Image 1 (tube, helix red, strand yellow):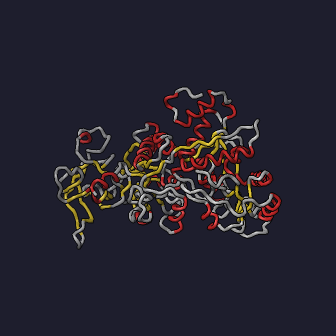
Image 2 (cartoon, helix red, strand yellow; image 1 turned 45 degrees about the horizontal axis):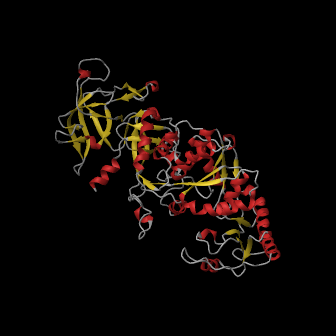
Image 3 (cartoon, helix red, strand yellow; image 1 turned 60 degrees about the vertical axis):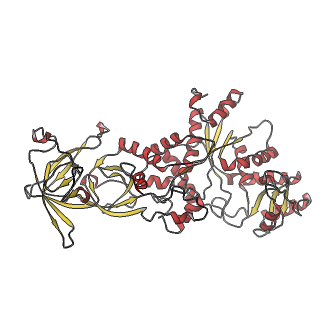
Length: 561
């Protein structure tokens, strides 16, 4: 049992109470049951961490079960992506299962319900059934087919299974109570005809079980003890238990469903249907677009599994839904990347700087720390030459006292290098500054130990040597939506809040030490933010994604707005 009860969430308290009541810890089993109809997103991360975390805490098995009962929407691509995401997060499942593994036993149990008079074949249209369902304040009306004979129901159900009937012609319904206060208990559908190939069973079946019939029975087959769902499944619990009542044997473990709150992330949507809409409309470039809240998208953007798990731990497990500011997730990403990301120099908005008194053909290699947060990361050498790039915004002809970067007549230090002084600048025909001429103090080299090297100046700039710089495509990502809750406006489509500036592509110039960087390698571009190598990179063309800025600039922008 867990030692510190104060640190337990309410789900863990439920488990602790079960153990205290005599349930053997050795029999605990959990599951993570995604439907393979899309990629996992940040909302799934809480469920993944909860279920697999419980497995680790209690030394219990955790099944990965794919609820694959709808061949119209499910694909092997999604199965593969889900498995990759869970492994990337650092979790291992005990057994890999599929609801389709149980199609035969579920069918056999459905036959038994028909024989007991607890299920019947309904031949009405979906519209007719919906009109008879009633409302929360008005009881439903029994189907005219509710009292079909057992023999007729068996014959029709077998015909459904054998492909005799077309889609929508018949369904199998549980016979429960059309006057129940819980609308889900009003003779729910158990099976429908779907003549579509399944990603695992191909065309072996042309009837498929509904979620409510499948889920609890699959938990029971797998001896899952605690079936943990999000709050929208709370009304389903009564039906979950009713279906279990029909099949559970006294000596076998009976699973229990318990619910926790979904954590919604600001400035995004996590509905698979809406994420698919973003993909199909070309608003994003696939499920793993770095702007997507999918785990694949976050991995491609440069997030780390450690940061995601730390975020999930911080927001915790609760009984009430709320919106979590995406800035909190980004905070955890920054915290981890600050510890592990090597520092490199890059310029994304270049302005040419010429050191007029630096020898024409001279070049030297300056020493720079790879990561000041990690002594073991060592150091690297940076090429330095007469002509450099700095950021355009780091130079002004004239500036007030609070501008500590480069201005005419002013001095700054080039990071890891020399102190320079701006002497003049060159403009194009439109008056835009295209070059800055400077002089340098040869005795001011960082780390040289000379008196001049210890001289303090207020500004320090990053730079790259033009002669040695690697040209790269740099993708600057921002929030996908301008509104905190794009789903919350009932009068507007969430698509109306898409941020038109969520992606900007620029050409950057980067120090040569990263020429052989591989996809998913992460770096801090000094003074600019955290970036990683995108999968689109090739040996001839590096492509970087901005993971996060060094600070939360979004909050400042919103305050100004």
